[in-house]
Image (cartoon, rainbow, N blue to C red):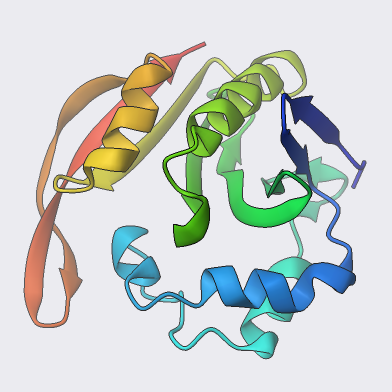
Length: 177
């Protein structure tokens, strides 16, 4: 896969991961509520070196066609999170987007600015027509990131995520590029 690198002020996005940042990556990923906030049952806690290496080294393309791309977010030269595209659909020209930022890096506008660059990449490099995602209805910070990037609320997915013996609802958002 081609290496991409983008800059926005004091933020760098790159799909290349230098393993010298591995311990820092594990540290910021190792948050108890990460899997819950991402609505992802496969995001382990504690997050181990094996988890990180599996994520970093996973296949993201088939027959030279990207089906997923993750960008590592660096803020002031420190690994601070991940943002990416998954389920890239070249027939319907749409993709899912998702992101997370380590706790100590939140409230700096990092996710908002990183998402704006991923939107631009999706449109200009991948020729996507739309992006979509869903977010827990109580995840106000993530909702604000989406709204600041002009995503629109499309509906509510009631009881769409089962976690720790409870059901949680989510909002479905999309953006026409």
